[in-house]
Each structure stands twice: as C-alpha cells, then as structure tokens.
Amino acid sequence: MSTTTIANREVHVNDEGFMTEYDEWSEELAPHLAAAIGIAELTDDHWKAIRFLREDFVDQQETATLRRVTKVGGIPTKQLFTLFPKKPAKKMAYVAGLPKPRGCV
Amino acid sequence: MTITDHPSKAAALVPDFGDEETDRKICFICSKGTLDMAYPALIMANGALGEGIETHIFFTFWGMDMISKKTQHDLKFTILGNPATHMPQGLGGIPGMTAVATKMMKKQIADLDVPEIPEFLEMLSDMGAHLWACKMSVDMMDLDEDDLMDQVEDIINVSEFIELSDGAQVIFV
Image (cartoon, rainbow over all chains, first blue to last red; front, top):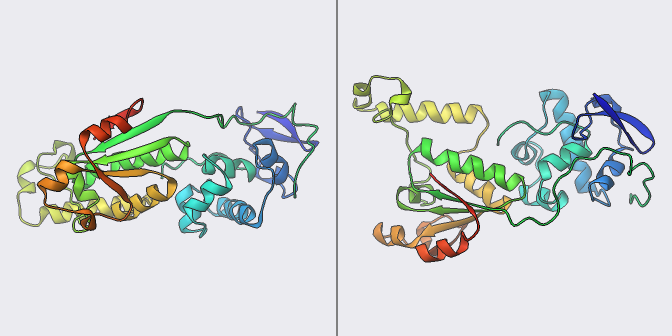
C-alpha cells in the first residue's frame, strides 16, 4: 500500500489514488480532494452527498452506489450528475475518502 | 470553501477520471420483453452512464413491452424454453408456473436492490440515457406516443437509428 500527500498530510491510498483508511479522512481534507479532481467548491449539496456516503459506509461496509445515494440518501440522480460531473459515483467516493463503489446498480 | 493553492498537488496521486472529452458512445437495442432479457441492457447502460458515456437505448419488437405503459409493470419470466433454469421443461407448462417463476425472479432482483423495469428506466433517463421507440414496432402493435412512458424521447425509424448510432458500440439484446 502506498501513501500520498494531500494538503500536507500523508494518507494511505490504493494504486489509483483512492484513500484506503476510513479514519485518515476528515472534513478538512475533502475540499483538497475535490480540488484535485476539478471540483473547485464544495456546496451544501456536495456535503450532503459526502456525509451520506461516510455515514452509510459505516453501516454497510461498502460505498453506496448512485442508486443508493438517491434512494436512501434522498439526493436526486440528476443532481448528483451536476454536483460531480460525468462520473458521480467514483468522484463522490474519492472526495469522501472511500473506495469506489462495487455494486453494479 | 474555494481551494486556490494546493502545493502538494504535483506530488499527490490522484485518480484519472478521464475527464477529457470522449466521443465514446454506446447504443443498446432491446428486442425482448421477458424479465430476464430486459435487465441486461439496463444494467450495462447504467454502468455506461456512470462512466460518463453517451448512452442510447432503442426498443424494438418485444422490447416495446419494456416502455409500453400497459405492459412494463408486468414483464414475466418463464421456465419454458430456458434449460438454464435446470428445471424439468414439463414443469413450465403447468398453469401458474410462469407466475411463480416471475415472482421468484422479481424477489431475487429486489433482494439485490435493483429497481423494477419502469423505475429503472426512469433512473437511466435521469442519468442522461436517450430512450427511443422503433417506428415499425409502434405501427405493428398499434401503439402511439401516449402509450409509451414519458421518458421515451421519440419514435424513430431504422434509418434514424442507424444515423444516431454512427460511431457507437452497438449491443443487441
């Protein structure tokens, strides 16, 4: 497992750059992760999705899929595509310091 | 909060989300109206849309059952003609068996938290999928636009489909 430096903090990541240690993430890190993938500002709507993913991961031990973020988290699918353009599931997971979702739907 | 400086970025390992413009495009042709044949294209389309790929779904022949308001809530699965169920084929002919098999499959799908067909199509449409109905099938089945779910963009003929699928990867189901 390798490490990388985000906002002057060393964190463990997989070979793609997704953080691997749940507890190494904190809310201060999220804007830096977002900026690194081209999301300049995290709005309240972004935070709603990020916080849902973080809480849901504790319960489920896996990252929520888009459908789950919509169905359980209550954030419309269309909005997720606006907040995290093109690849919302992966981008949300990255900013939330979680692995990519594994579920197909 | 806006981040303007990130001195560590150059050194940071960041996933490549392939955000540069891509012309990759996928077209699915749904030609079957049974439950087990309706899902594969939708699941793959969901995956494609999640990857930011332009996705079209063209419904033709029995695939019309997936988008017709009258039938889309009532797709069925049958043992008959499907040896992959590993059930005696004679069982499939018993009255009520198709209903039982359908109920079982719907439960298995629901257990995976995969939506039913109408809700699935609404979700794909929200993700940006383009849904198209086949003109010849519409004519043959005596349907019109009002019979089809609202998410269907238009009724198009084959030459229009061939035009819009130019350069796309086409998957026939």
